Image (cartoon, rainbow, N blue to C red):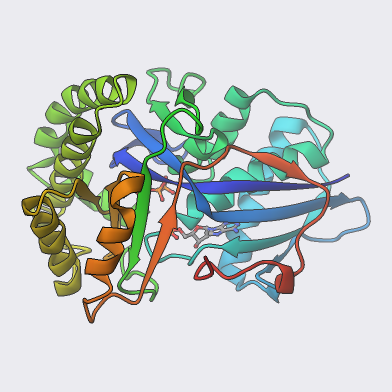
Length: 339
Ligand code: ADP
Ligand code: DP6
């Protein structure tokens, strides 16, 4: 009753921002992402009749009570789904900064959904796995698939039609994402809280919803035709719209810092010089830059001159869920800053 699964993070190019159902994690809009090879989570789950409670070891240490409670309540959903009552021992290693806007919740819950169901002997299709991952963290449903994936919001109240579908496999288009680390501290407002406040209080939220369907069509055409400029422009515009909704919230908030804006400006300078680079930003201060392989080094060279840049992680399109034999020992798991 033990299984190990590995899942990668994803970067949304059309963002998920806002829920219509908090409990089931049902979104207000479709979103579309690229799974990244560099950042991932590996999780081992072992169900055992002898356990008196769930346990959670995170990055080699016993997790805090609040983190353990989140895992336990997620496992309750899995137990209910599978019709079992056993507790589980969970061990997970993040090869991604946690709670810093690098989407650890996406890789974390995708890996947990896959490992826990496999440990219970369930052989689930990817759609069902995506539905289960979604209930841990919305963006996790997209990490079930490699390459480009779209999360279809669905319309049913039970969430049975709200899951991700693959759009283009990881080998079909070699676009690159440079994840620029500016700040690795835990963000003060989680994405969950940030999006809730936005939906409830921002007068700009209706504008976000009005724009997103067109942007989604536009980006799907860009992917199908491998039109990088079109892809970059729409992804950047979509991220700016999402962040604009937060400024209209009550109380207002932003994830940007002065360093965030400095990198955004640098990307504009790069474009002025003829380099194809576009940025996107999630619920955190760090910036992700989309580019083509031939421009990656030039962009790195420019960014390395900026004092506020603490790290640059080069990502390629990554795979979907993979099952493994065992959890890597902490020493075998390189830190995200390697490579
Ligand atoms: P991030 O930008 O890292 O996604 P969030 O605040 O959205 O930040 O999500 C962080 C949360 O994701 C953690 O508090 C935890 O609940 C969950 N998470 C992160 N890593 C894991 C993991 N390996 N296993 C299970 N849950 C995880
Ligand atoms: C800005 O998936 O972390 O990264 O569903 O509440 O767990 P919950 O939120 P989460 O939010 C992701 C928000 C985002 C955009 C995106 O990934 O689509």
